[in-house]
Length: 391
Image (cartoon, helix red, strand yellow):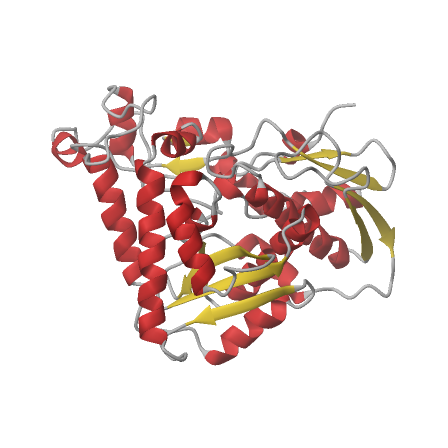
């Protein structure tokens, strides 16, 4: 659910001009093996669990970490665990976003099971919920797939292979239609969250849009200029086709010139760039321009913030993004201001106040930009076998 294809290098424009026009061994194309999972399960797959899981692993995930592990040792059951080696302790210190990403997985699993006439019986935290600090080895969910001819198929299933997070500039002249907002709100309804939105046609729309953009802009600046948070992104940054094909996760840069700069040691991912460097200021400017192109924002607010609520918020977000895909709308989550690390305290308080969640137990679980944009390709995904734990 975060940033790809946006990292630039200090002085890169000058150095890149000196590079050869054809860069040997470098490619800006996504390696086919890195996105093979988006083709869905093989036609010969007979295990309904593996068939459904092949779609579930296409769910959106923070930093594209794919922190899902499944145990298939019990016949007819799936135990979902959080991969504790794939967390975001700096930007997501309480793993709220990680729990939402477990929910996106469960929603796609349920949609896929329905497509095959299976009832997906999901028991959250069957051995007890995680504490408020971090996940632990206990399962997030235990799922039973039960054949049931009465199970209704969901039209959102067809959007799974088309759903991609779109971080590009949007078309400011094409606001989200009122009927689309209603459809997105309807997609949330199976889960108990408040869905809100703003566009140029809503009450006080232009002024509110400016406030949304300003908070998002400041939150992005903070994340880029806080050394430990930008380094968390750098650690999962895959530069060039070879790295992308090797890892099939994380944040992706396929610019051949950036790859060459990395090979030459001119793009150092071992240390954070200075706040006033081109690597930082160019990203801030680029993101500000994208915010300025955004005709609408939406958000989801929960009552409470326990682990089950976080998982269900992820399920709701998956449904909203699939519904947006069906409507031809692009979506880009803006989680920076929602993150609970100290440096984000200002934007965090500002966005809560803006969205009516500054008091009580209400929590803003999702905040995103939405609009019309050119289609983008899929993010890398590991193979299904990589998610199945041995034993």
